[in-house]
Length: 329
Image (cartoon, rainbow, N blue to C red; front, side):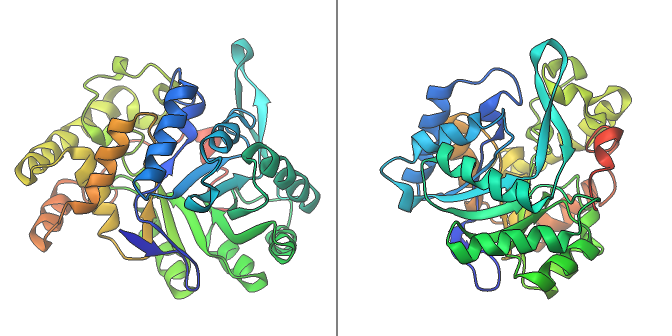
């Protein structure tokens, strides 16, 4: 099932592949397995591959570059930029400050092209809005890249209504990448109506709320990676959220699908201008996620889901407080 990206954009798969977890974001990953998963996505016609130049300092782009060799025409490459990295404990690398400086953007895209082994990027997205650089300047630099044929479409991520409007006044914005799921619906009030007014599609990331909506986790101790620091996965929040997930699981059982498939189907049911990019490293999960396209949610189903998980019902923020401040700039 393909959907048009943006008012005048290309057709892309409604269920894409988020590749971040292939570079150690959620525990140890396996490069060979990850490449096989990317290749399988393309075999199945699911062409939207989402990455970022800062995912393990370019490692993620390198994986995709290997996987798409000989089949570049089958892949739609979505690349985020503008998030710097910083050293973390025990030699780890974590998110640092953000930058929208035009000179940074022009430099970063060349490294991305090299790692991806391609001469153009389909969708180039500003990962966060830099509060110290007018967004018009950043988008102006990206518009120059479009003119040069280096990138084809421009995207924003986690941007406010004000930033979206300012950016769109400089150059057409094709997509807004933002967290959207049963548990992350704050954009419905202002952001979603704005992008629809402007003809901008949504690329919904974390449709499973980083795996919580899969129903696979039963206690906070089950989380062995960075998600353990996210408020929704902690203490009392965890158990309150789990109660709702168990109800969703019962509903999914009645539909003959998994809770994950129900959650993805719900996102897709919110509009034809939405695609979603659940992340996985495994072919079996990829195929299960893609099968969510076939889950038909009736008006009664949607009401039942709403009764179980109304907007704002989740306990805890989606990021630790220090990262929340970078959102909605």
